[in-house]
Image (tube, rainbow, N blue to C red; front, side, top):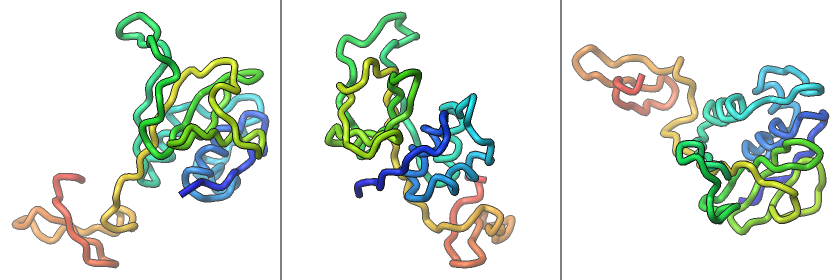
Length: 167
């Protein structure tokens, strides 16, 4: 699946637009998922971006140009894509979020034309975005414990059950 380009509507709304492209929703719906604060003078951060994605069944694995634990830069950077989708932090006039596909095509919230990471002055980090298979799409609030004996919960809507330990 190739995500649809979603332009950012606010000066610092690149992470909102990137999340919208990943989730397949509009910018305004993504902004609501972030809590609704308009990112004009200060944008959202990676922690907020990753939390929004996690709430919608996505996991992230981020690599940085500078490996702090080794106190050095990577010898080969940027690394080759290793997932179908990646969120990348690049430099434009400031730090900026873009979406990269497995083939290296970059979808930038600032422009509808496809790009490559080589089009940017710097690439600071690359995060693989992976959809986690969900057994059902219901919120945890719909799960009820079967009994103390089984240690399982089930969804009141679809009947799917799973181990209680996960909750």
